[in-house]
Image (cartoon, rainbow, N blue to C red; front, side):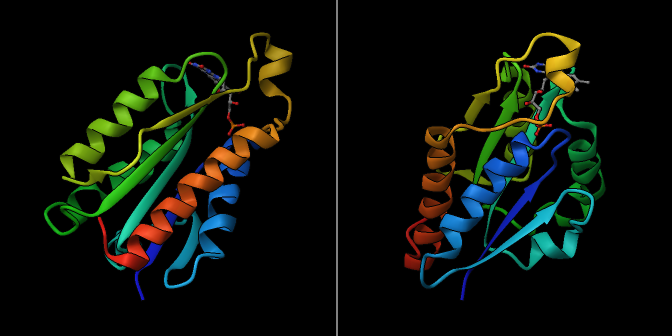
Length: 163
Ligand SMILES: Cc1cc2nc3c(=O)[nH]c(=O)nc-3n(C[C@H](O)[C@H](O)[C@H](O)COP(=O)(O)O)c2cc1C
């Protein structure tokens, strides 16, 4: 059975809710196994044993979060050339922007020669002040539904072998 691996990092909970929404929806699709894993835990063997990926990260300081970057740094060369052509999607949780994190993540995925099968989603939590930025986040139902659709799309596509 094909395996969808969802890798996420979250500091204040927004990205985690997005990743869990995608994982719950993907997990209810028949014919694909879904694995949800933090960026801290994910190793190159996990990438090699999966058939498709969803990467979920906050934008911090106009880049993907450092923990997510550390995951890519750790796994980039060990899997380079071994996962080419596999499908992926990316989701960014941002305060007000998210564009740089999206570009950075897509560039890494291009380096791996992954295939982007849905447009990258940026969900903004509309936070500006220090207090707001450090507070726990709640992702609205509509936005979580969008993440769920992405999870379901990846899972169904893998199950049907259409990517
Ligand atoms: C250190 C730090 C830097 C941040 N830098 C940005 C930024 O460059 N652009 C942006 O849109 N949001 C920025 N934010 C806001 C986060 O992206 C936002 O709070 C997001 O909801 C965090 O996702 P999380 O809840 O999964 O941690 C920053 C937050 C922190 C803590």
